[in-house]
Image (tube, rainbow, N blue to C red):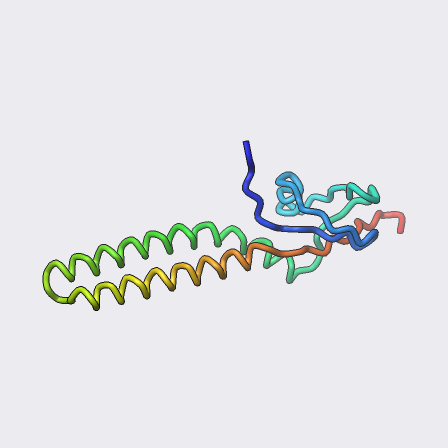
Length: 129
């Protein structure tokens, strides 16, 4: 069974190692729970508020893909019906369909770009420090 990766990487601030985060590590980041670095065995957590906001915005990208595909299907169907009724000719219907498909692929490229990020993970400070 293959798991689709989001492309989220983590960089350990202690040993400067970059690793592809596993789903359990992404869940630990989401619930603000530290986890250990596979390389230096330090406990890591995400502290930067800007990166936390960007990481949490990944939830909305899944709904964006679904709603964009639904919008494209609806727009194509409306253009087809308008062509059948006679409100559009074949060339206008084709142009409208191509524009909608182009916007969809441009949006999916943007979503794909936003999903790939590298998070800087800081070492957890102990109470003794």
